[in-house]
Image 1 (cartoon, rainbow, N blue to C red):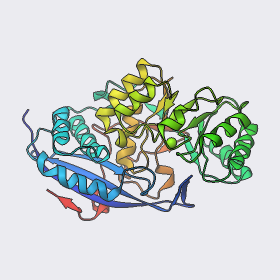
Image 2: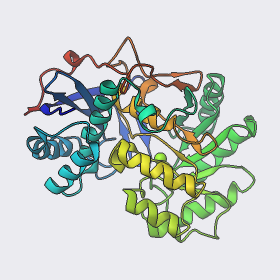
Image 3: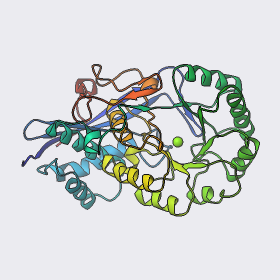
Image 4: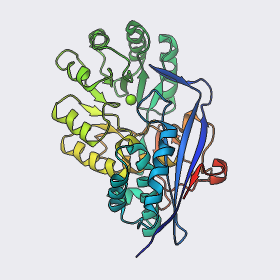
Length: 369
Ligand SMILES: [Mg+2]
């Protein structure tokens, strides 16, 4: 069927953090700016995508950068067939170099439209859900050892089977102490991750790994650069996952070929959307590399996209699908919210992404074409 993209609306929406600020080694944030893309077709169908960077210093992505990139791209996409996702991605790459996190919102919106058009879920278009619920995990911000251990036990009580301790941004001995306190209390079936979000030196990482050598855990993105992390090979006791260094598909291949990554924390928007994540999923399967299917932050739209692709990952390779729902105060779709229940997220049931956002809460578009 010949269908055309007739309109693209870009919204800007604030997501406030409930309770304490969201903390990582380099930042402490109380409110996130989410950019939402609405693609409308000439027969009245709508698809949605979303990108929400974790402030301006987490990585190269920037909320207003997404608006600028989408303003550049959108006029070139009017009249394109939304069912031909690869074709539209090609058009975007011919129009603007880079800015995958902005292009991904269009990509995800097109998968949403395709699902609605073919009356099937995005996970079905991606090959089919292996499970109808995916495991999530909880990220615990830097805190005292006693508080970290208490939060860890509380989250295990709420059903989480994987805990990510945010480390870095303070003396590494405090991270070591927190990690030991948590490990003393949990059983070995709970997966433990120490995520420095680029905040350690190689020296810190070696010191941490040696001091925690008897604790089975994964170290995630300890240092800023690929080269620093690659240099840790043979010097530490723990598997290393890449997150912020996995900037795109080429960077993922580089990490794999160098043997520098034992797994990944993926951010769907950073990779370029669902199309890119499908490729990355298949590459990781061919090398038996475990990974997450996350995004850095955001509401129900991006959460649904992560859950759909996560549901299609071999369960023994799916580390989890982190979503921000427990950290913010409202859903875009109060009827079909994407949320963690007992440590898991149900795969949405409705066609497409399965989320129907109430766009009235986004206000007027900041850009329309
Ligand atoms: Mg991470």
